[in-house]
Length: 259
Image (cartoon, rainbow, N blue to C red; front, side):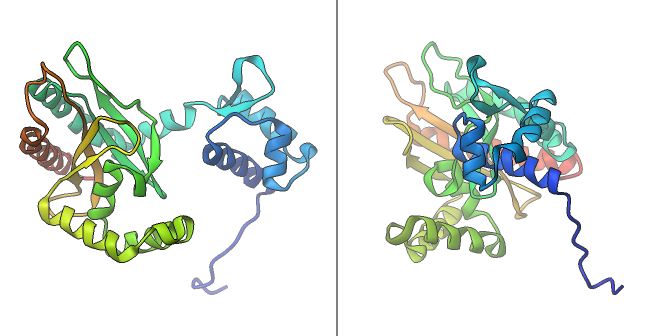
């Protein structure tokens, strides 16, 4: 058989298990066996064993002892053990702690996951009152400050299918030309400063962590800025600090062999 011909293997049970995890992740809510079966176009008998095994292995659990299944943190914990991610975290966390202490704000690190960004690390504000985003939080790349940073520094080849997807999903409210112009401006500026679409009163300030100087985007370092009478810095004053910190994480990640 020619090496140019891609072999396709079937593993029906594995496919069903992955479909269950994907639908629960996409729906972002606990679902019953019947609801999962209906969403996947399968019978309850087809997925009963899959749900049982996934629950036994710790990938799923039932909400408050009910018949509603939801995904546990097990998959996330496995991902955190992967060498590239652990290398990034080792380089980032000490710098993030210094940044939070310096500007009196929390900060978090987000990476791209398909059409979303997912937070993989955070450091709390040292102030008495602060705002932070939990680890594991997900949001569309098209609807977050971190997402705009990730999209702005993506290669055109990597960004193009995402822009096409957002156009199909958001319809007339998404103008690809306007987005490309904004992303180009963000990249030229070197950071993003934008009102949060998730929380009133929060301004997202973010900068890119790259795979080597000028390389592909790895993560977005973001401060969800919360102002107040005791805030040591105005939002604009935090920009040099977050850019400097993101650049230092980029340097340290590269010195550890890259991702």
